[in-house]
Length: 430
Image (cartoon, rainbow, N blue to C red; front, side, top):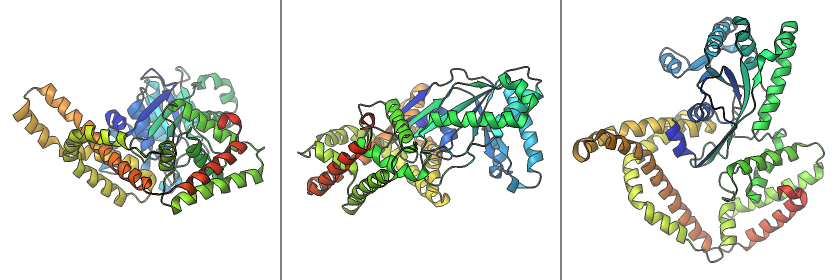
């Protein structure tokens, strides 16, 4: 999974990542992108984690597989009258896991938005409650911690986008022993609010959901934030993440003039609508503005250099890629699931599809087991080469179309919108 994720994401960054695999820690994460969240946290970071998972995905067929993947069912009221009793047994299991040094990963929000939004929803109390129950069951003998975790994507459904995972400093629940014994409900409520605040600090949090589209359009135009397509390559991923946070914090503040916000929303929306009407992309307008001669030499060189690897990658991966794409989009009605499900199904089908070719490679080309092993591993890279070749070819054609068009209206509207943004934003956010 780690290998597949490193193929899927172009840039990755981990902030304050725990160094130990064991630690009796409950990691409470945001839930921005469905299955992609547990895959990313568990597949790319060091701590060994057990997952709290919706009980309705557990059945006679999936239960052994999910248990093997270290998943524990969590029951909701709609899952039956005995949900509370069943959860008590699961919480006891959680206590055993923590007691022996493993960790839990809990998605505190409980659900994912249908459309990807950079925000944190209200956090539930379950994570803190599980921690204190575990401490009670072991008579407070060992330390148990809670760590706020933030999973940040430029776009979770777009291959070769960016990922940043940030961890807060840990909170030791044992420090609250006396207060908890005196008033458990009060301590659980207060600690949940503390965890929620720390989680907001690990992500981009648009507390005003209605301003999230404006936040994204500003990042696109300034090219400094976490947008997947429009960003300055010279700016590090961590700096882009911090810019995204600072911009959201500034928009969230209550001292913003409502009329001023409405005006800038309208101006950025008008530019966005002009691009849609003209069937243009901001990335292409920016390219043409900064490359007046319309040179596509970069794309030509990339197409030539990648071609041999792309041919091999197409043979190895095209059929399973198309199969996984169509199957996922048919099975999953919510697009927020598509990126992660395509990744998992694609990983499995590409591996199975290439078993015969790997056997033939071992038999006829190299009987050395290590060489065969690295040939099998290289399939991910040749598949990536094929994907990169196709996206580069598409970009080459799009730039060719743009070269044949007059973009004066788009240039003028873009310049006007940026001028308005510079007046609206503080200087540090230009």
